[in-house]
Structure formats: structure tokens, C-alpha cells
Image (cartoon, rainbow, N blue to C red; front, side, top):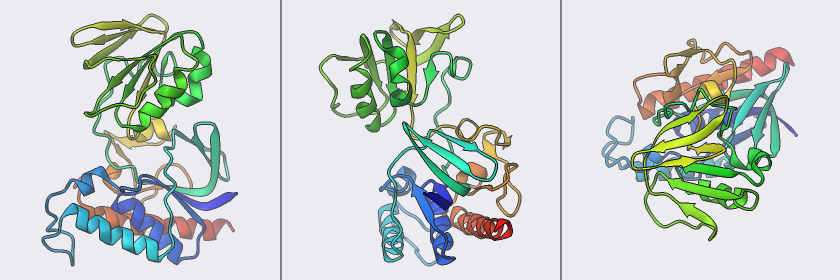
Length: 284
């Protein structure tokens, strides 16, 4: 199935884009978390969202949830690893699966986790962002996974079936549901080293000799998510219609720049949806 619009992100920008696309009878798919946005649910008070004064982030999230449920908008709880412009459509990669859409709206928020030293240098040379995608390449080898969320545990368990040795470095607190053959390393990664390929991870108190490193974050930087996407610093470059430099690709919310405000993100999500709809109508 090829969707009209694929929306990546379930913060206020992504949800607003989904609502406005659905109102205009477009066939959409919305990728993200059923918790919507970690920033939203952690907010103690929200006083600048019109019509919802002195409300907690969790209460605002409940209102968002009620809205999309009434409109029968579901969330596909899968992480998009790469998006490729294929000419007249986009291919969205999720591990071994692929989705297709005629237009996309990137609403992934801002990438707060800065790359490790050496991470970008060795990307594709032993560093990856999808462990289940590339696991077969490391059969019988030593693999290290740096996990920023609990979803990374599932990927680690899968890779451990193929790797000779797997180290897991959790970047969050709590207990871990990992296979017995996985070694948990509670240390802070600092630098990825190697020659033509990765061979070592330097941590604050130790180091690991490894053949491959997977950095499993909540989201990857937009420039890595969509190859060829024009950036302005850490943000996606857009015009007033939320258009990017790639035909059929739109962006909205914090990923497009400051101020990082829910109201701004929701408004941009609406504009991105209207622009995507106009684009689809123009190519029919």
C-alpha cells in the first residue's frame, strides 16, 4: 500500500499534521510513540497553549489523545531508520520492512543527544543505527550496543543470537530485560575509535574492543534520517509553507528551529499538512 502522506513524529506538530491531513480525506500513516512526546508528558505546567491554562503535560497529552481517537487516527509504533526519495514517492525503512508514501512530513522534534566523538566519522564503517537491520553482518563477531531507551533491549536480544559477544551500555536507569549472554556495561561512552573501520569504544572508566557499534537513540538526526535534506545548523531548513529542499518533503515543529513551543509546533503541523495536501493535489 502506498499512503498519501507519512508523518514521522507524534509531538504536537505530528499530531496536528495528522489531524489536518485526515480532515482533508488523505490516506495517512503516523509513526511515533503512543506516549506522544517524552517532553510533553514530563512538563509540570503548560501556561502558553491557548485555551488550556495551568494544565500539566500529562493532561494536555490526554486531550491530544482524545482528539486523535475521535478521528480514528492510529499510531504506528515503529521507528523509521531511513527515508529515501524515489522520484514520485518516498520509501520509509523500518528494519526489514518498507512503507511507501507520496509525501512525507518530518516532525521528529529536536535531537538533544549529540553524536559521540567518532560516531559520524565511522557511520557505515562499523557504526549503525539499526541493529536488527545489520545484525547478519556481525555473525560471530563482537558487537556493542549503546541503548537510549528500552526498545534497544529487544534489538540487543536479537543481535546476541548472532554475535559471538555482545556488550550493552544502557543510557537510562532501571532494570533490563536482556538475555543471559549479554554483558551490561554501566559506564559512559566517550569516543569511537578505529582505522578504516571501528575497532574500539572508549568509555569514562574503561574501553571495549569491538567490531561494530550500534547507537540506538529515540530518533536520529534529520540529515541522517533523510539523505540530502538541507539543514541550517541543527535544524531542517524550511520556507513559510514548511517545504524542505526535497520535493514532497515537509517539516514542522522543533526540528525546524526555535522557539521550542507546543503552540508553534501545532501551527506548523497544520501548515505542513495543508502544503502536503496542495502538493498531492497538484500531481494528481
